[in-house]
Image 1 (cartoon, rainbow, N blue to C red):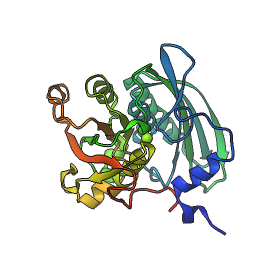
Image 2: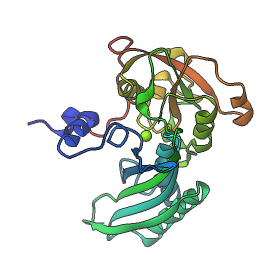
Image 3: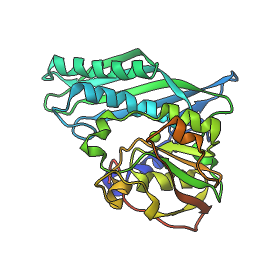
Image 4: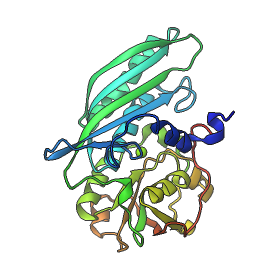
Length: 292
Ligand SMILES: [Mg+2]
């Protein structure tokens, strides 16, 4: 009998979505957010995300920082579509032994992040897990993106260059709790650099780069020497640590726009790979898998 840890996260999701009716390529599972076209000027975006004590944050972690992270992770996914998050629904499943001050601190941290990115709490649910069990936080959010501005993972073309913002690796040292989702950066890129495909890096480049290439029906060739490393990190860490929450995107293979450095001084934009025909290029292993 196979177990979740035998098949891993991506294979599990593939199996599960076969069991229910799903939307088409844009509406269905497999991108940072689902896209719903109701015919208006803006497309609706939908997202859900989970965080578990002991997996995404440690018991005793700073409550406000964990609250910031819970919202920032979701905002980052909206940014990766070229859009913005608007309304949040938050479900918390907590043990009765939890200190009230901790969960209040968590909501304060969420509030700071919601405010910073112009989103609001729309509702939620609180329930109990057995004492001794980990706290579980589930966040659903809606948002929107202008028609014609939406960027899927699936739009990359053979010959496109792949770029990343910022530096990768070593997120556990602190950045994973305090990062700023790349909302303004993504909107600027959509306007000035016309990405053909985009996602945020949550599970490490080794996991996420193949996902973007596969969604675009391509292979990829990575130039390992060009991957921008967080100071003190190895290439292995940059590929596998995860939770960088930087943008990975494909764009026709021109140089980086000069205006980028003027608009976002200090934030690197680095060309690290290119899309090649499916079946060519290379295979990357590693990165964060929730079950493996
Ligand atoms: Mg994502």
